[in-house]
Image 1 (cartoon, rainbow, N blue to C red):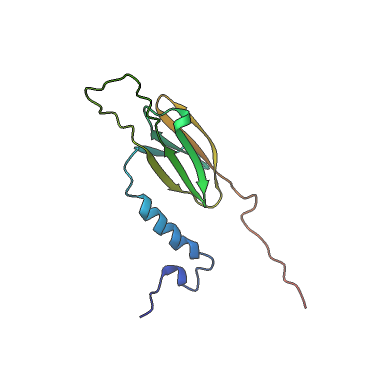
Image 2 (cartoon, rainbow, N blue to C red):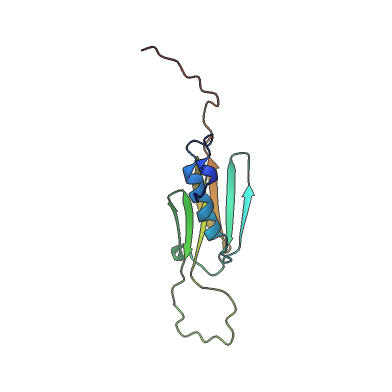
Length: 137
């Protein structure tokens, strides 16, 4: 029996990677740390905010890999002379991924009071309607 996927539908030309996108998104949906918000700041801009209390700028990295925004955090074990009676603040390493649509780019990022803000911008094409000329042979 042949497995029929929605990307194999004859009217969906060029959507083969959409199925891979859905699979990648399903894998990253189970992540729970760190907590985050996603907001639309205008019609074409978005902001992802991650709660990364205790992480310094040098403990964090933000990359875009194959249309996937990846935020990684790893705190250095600089405990020194500190003796914890209780350690309830999560400082564990993490990797949080977000799949970006075509035309969405990272506009910038900043760290403010334990919140990592990542600004995204959707590039809007100049023309929506394209006229195709028919040539003769």
